[in-house]
Image 1 (cartoon, rainbow, N blue to C red):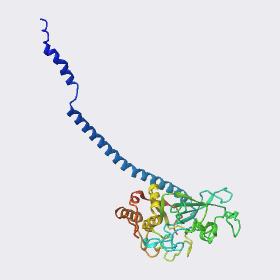
Image 2 (image 1 turned 180 degrees about the vertical axis):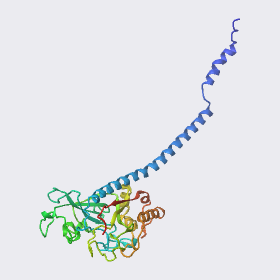
Image 3 (image 1 turned 60 degrees about the horizontal axis):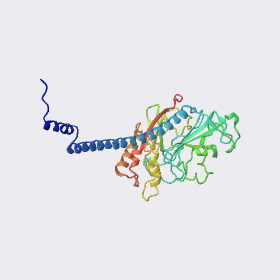
Image 4 (image 1 turned 90 degrees about the horizontal axis):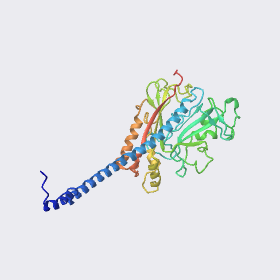
Length: 374
């Protein structure tokens, strides 16, 4: 049978029911907005946390890159070092350096005339350039130092590398070579520290270089290789396994006072040189430089001198005491943790706590592959 027709009241109410089924109530809209706001809030928190993690990570990438560049350059220089017993090395020891590290032994802060970071100079087969003509030489004198001249110098408290092109001894320019005449490689008893002014900057690092370009610390051949490296320290790992700041075995050579006396030994007792550097992120370094003018604030020198020297026999280079490999790195990390917790250096001076998160310590050992010990 055919379906009965809808009554008027039923037909009128059907569109109204369908329209209600397709909409939202005010309560539902409010709940949706609250949920949406919670999702946005959680997303913002996650973005903030990600940025907080990413920013220090980017700083570490910056310092990691600088450390890699520095160590790769040192590795090339040391790999080509002239490892002989008849040439001189300007390296840390009881003769070349005043006390330890050419400066503040015992882990104390810098005093007048001291040098906080180590210096090193040696002959290498890495090509260099003559200072006047720019011609390339197959040999060079290489030196490393952290510039400690004055804070008006763009290179101040940054790691520098010196490379001087050398002649062979067959082309010796004379007994009294001048700055305009390239030096030859010299053999003992001539030494790097005794050849005259052109190489004086390889062994000096006083405070007048920038204002007085004629003194013994100045040399235009220096270039900044580590703009964030403000501390440079090295020690020796001997073939007997000891870590020391004297480049020979004091047990088997009790009478040795230098690399040349009483026997010319060169670096025959040294298995490798371990280099430790402290690198600061450039953004925080800029903050440190800007903050240095505030009374009572720590300067880059304060921060650098808070990182104690490697200590072998209390940093004096005498006696039989030795320190284990990696101790200087551990000591520096402890100092950085102190900055983070107190905001003070050991003077004390106020240091930005951001420095603690922006400074990283790196170390690497460089095998010398020297002649067998005798």
